[in-house]
Length: 176
Image 1 (cartoon, rainbow, N blue to C red):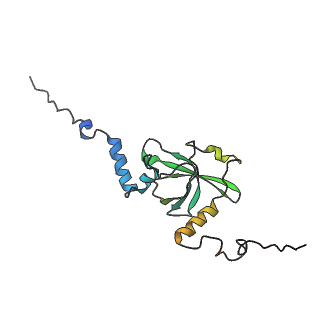
Image 2 (cartoon, rainbow, N blue to C red):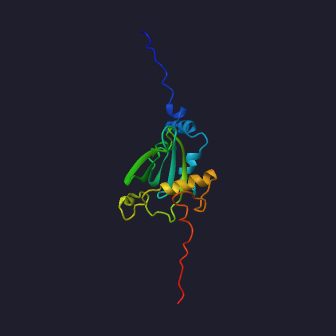
Image 3 (cartoon, rainbow, N blue to C red):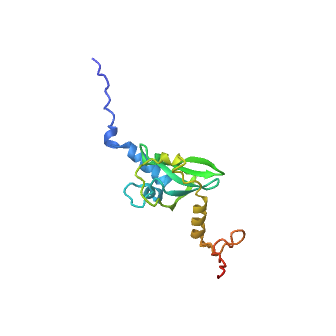
């Protein structure tokens, strides 16, 4: 009788790599966010994290920067899938844009202004209604960028059409 060749069983992948998803996620985060700044910006344990209602300014590598009120922070299965919904008004038309937080096209995300009072909802879809709509945040973002660059912030250094709007008007009262 001839002996039938038998092969040893393959090595168990469970022993070699018990949790492959977390290893792949960690390797992708190391490439997409090497410093860990965006992870900290959206980490649930960080008290200074981005929250719905905050005004954000997103700088893109190609294209104009986009700013708006954060309506939703969507965190799906892994941290890499985290995305935000920004709402702003451009030429009296409301615009909503989704951004993937760890996208390589995003150069940076900054918090321009925090919501005065913490929102009691995770998704602020009610801000689409006219009663709650913030409108255009262009002025707030422009003032933030001016302050960040070290330029004049107040209305005293304004020139042009709005030069005299910052001061008080004096009214001459006639005595009887």
